[in-house]
Image (cartoon, rainbow, N blue to C red; front, side, top):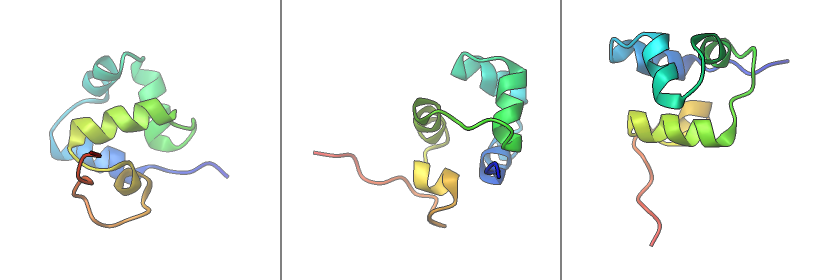
Length: 76
């Protein structure tokens, strides 16, 4: 069963961004990005990292592993 990514959609909508705008940032098509949000396509780890950085959160938050939206402190 594919995983859904409701937080990715919610974060995008909170910023009043269109899928097309985030797709351009990620260098992918709007259709590919739409599939990510719907869970129809697994999100590659490098794209998850880019999304976490863009939204100033953690990959764990995007994946629903934690409810803490704050990013982890940078590694030393």
